[in-house]
Image 1 (spheres, one colour):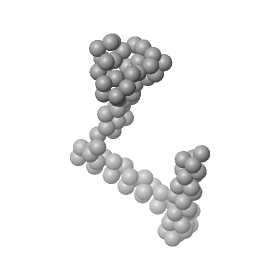
Image 2 (cartoon, one colour):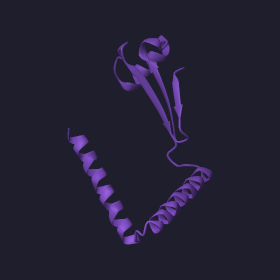
Image 3 (cartoon, helix red, strand yellow):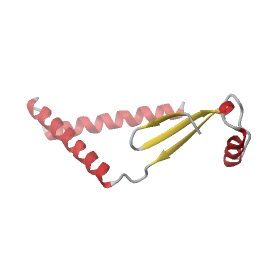
Image 4 (cartoon, one colour):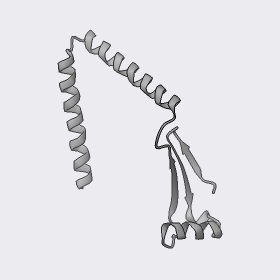
Length: 106
């Protein structure tokens, strides 16, 4: 199936207009999803890497450590204690989670 592919190293997605899918492939998709597909719909198939490979995992950990080190250096330069930084981070996380809950309740 040809479609617009998006790939970010963790997930690959293919999006295809239903009206553009060959009849044999469309029949397979309809059997797979369990119902008839409409011409005005799109099908999106995503392939996820549940477990990153070792190289990707190490690169991610290295990047996270670098970001944390830059954050600590910036906080130190600004005279912010580790405790103050922790309180600010906890507050930001709480605010974010509160916003997410409000969005899901709407």
